[in-house]
Amino acid sequence: MKISGADDAYDDVHEWVLRLLPPGDRRALTAHTASRRSDEPVMIGGDPRDPAPALRLRYDGSREQAVRVAGHRVRVAVIDGERETANRDAGGGWKPPEIMFTASTADGRQAVLGEIARLRAAAHAAERKPVFRMLGNWGGWERFDDLPPRPLDSVVLAEGQLERLTGDVERFLASEAEYVRRGIPWHRGWLLAGPPGTGKTSVARAVAGHFGMDIWYLPLSDVKKDGELIRHVGRVTPRSMLLIEDIDVFRAATARDDDGGDLTLSGLLNALDGIATPHGLLTVLTTNDPDALDPAVARPGRIDLREHLGLADAGQVARIASRWYGIPLTAADVPGTGGIAPAQVIETCKQHDDVIAALTALAAQPVAA
Image (tube, rainbow, N blue to C red; front, side, top):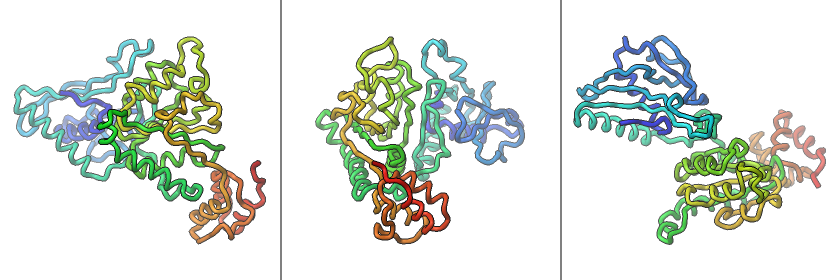
């Protein structure tokens, strides 16, 4: 039996195997931090019972070893997926590493399965934090565990806008049974549009964190072929958010001509709303220029909700400054401060320890046309 490196239980299983090994056999380990790629090991020595902070230890797996699981002898080894992947440079997919268990009896196999089930149950019993993943250089999704969550109350939008967005997600997540009953694919798409610095990405992160949704961040410029894009999107887990920023700058989203086999509009459309689109996917596209998009990208079924995030009015400025300085403020306290990007409001607050100085500086900034 095997546990794939793409499985969330992979690190837990590795650490469990380490605990099964006698201390004298723990000579060569691999270690990775939360922000490293899982296939970039660092060789360390020393006592694995006292790991360096922010490191997770793994069984090296360069040679097969025998362990005892509930009294049964089981052989364990790690299969390096990267070494086994053939023709990766020619476009082949990346295969994650695997940890493999071999038991000589049915009871031994059941003992291993029981321990893995216990590890999974323990992981799910703990408070689960949403995971951030990004498409990596080797064609696989990399997991980052050290990205701090964005609290929902840290995002200051126009009155009623955040409530409208969270209400939409709440209804979507509760509607799975109705979608299935009607035979409709259960996924949803957002288009968040507006000038730079208006909080489009921050909103996506905060909403995902609020609902416990993993974020899968897809840099579209790193994808060269239609089939590659569809395979990547197809690996996204249910009830997750797929985030694609600045969709208007990609030719595949704005032009219908195929200029030589690169990523095309057809491939993008099939990824957003096709046979391989994951069940329960919330796709969030951000753009500074929604008019640049091909109409097929933004049609219902691919984009179900459009939201314009504009420059901050005086009320938003007051709420941002109030949260920053920890004092109550209203629009009446910040005259002449509207018409600037929320990101600029925050940057001005960073530069001034005194709220009066910050509001004075904000009032002196030119209002966008």
